[in-house]
Image 1 (cartoon, rainbow, N blue to C red):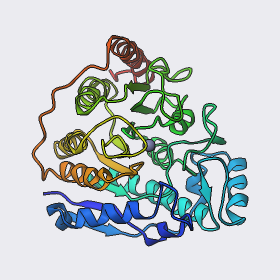
Image 2 (tube, rainbow, N blue to C red; image 1 turned 90 degrees about the horizontal axis):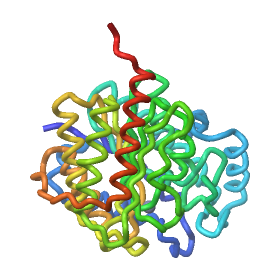
Image 3 (cartoon, helix red, strand yellow; image 1 turned 135 degrees about the horizontal axis):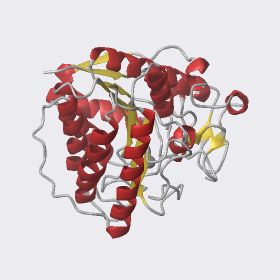
Image 4 (cartoon, rainbow, N blue to C red; image 1 turned 135 degrees about the vertical axis):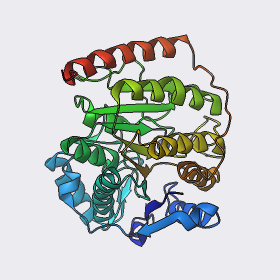
Amino acid sequence: MGLLRLVYDERHRLHRDPGDRHPEGVWRVERALEELRESPAWSHVDTVGAPEPDYGAVLLAHDPEYVEWIRVECSRGFHYVDADTYVNEHTCDVAASFAAASRDAALASAETGTPWFVMARPGGHHAGRRGPAMGAPTLGFCVFDYASVAARVLADRGYRVAVLDFDAHHGNGTQEILWEDYRVLHLDAHQRWLYPGTGSVEDVGGPGAEGTKINVPLYPGSGDGHYAWFLLEVVERARTVFRPDVFVVFAGFDAHRDDGLTQLEATERAYALFGSYLGRLLESGELRGVVSILGGGYGRGMARSFRSYVEGLLGLAEEPRVVPVSPGRFVEQGVGRALELLSSTVRSRYPPRV
Ligand SMILES: [Zn+2]
């Protein structure tokens, strides 16, 4: 039985809405941790703190102008920087600490084969290089994009990286930051028409990186079957083409049916499926590392979903049988085109050695 290294650090509590009205509250990480303590997985979990804030890690993903701007905003104390996103005097340092944790966890996982999970707050995947990404009106509760930080440091060390984002919202920040980076495969399933409105199946990556970004928009009410399809027909097929060494997972649990912000109607089984899949690849040596970073999850289902994912990752739960359900011809065809482009990008970027 393997071990999971879990980055939990009380400093996340410093990022808070004094009125406790914002959905991205302190309780989320605390409740998730309580739930994990009740699981048989807990005896396989080793918790570690986060490193000190490191803006060098942040700069792997963001432009210095944005970092300077948001630090000035943080220094002004609690207020909203846009209609969705609050900061206070601690927020930037808290986020820079989890950015450093994501960087270090990614490298440690790749070097040792141990899975890592970073209990990060505030959110990450909506923060683009220079702030709100791809025309989004806000930062969507996010300050720094931890997944891009982890992906970039791994790619810079020569690893092939896959970012798997199963958060119910599209990772527009991650997509923008990694758009032209052929070294990183970005696989993102999300609820269509939901904030931030991006993530079309026709978005496949910038020049030289075509096919390395694959988006799967799902209809409200989709449920576990669509996630099983995403895993089998998209993630697994893209993996066999791209052959990543490491998965960086933006693990948002807000597609759960008990979540108040989304309508995807998934259950814990979908998250157990993702966890089991990754755990199996790690165990068999097909992957060198898996680092997961906490994303969304704003309702009662979040903690149970987190627990199911971790139990799956550690091989402690039976892999649920879920019948895959296609999200429709249009998405199927779009994914097919993206996979063809991915094949040709891989052939030209990583020619076989003779
Ligand atoms: Zn989300």
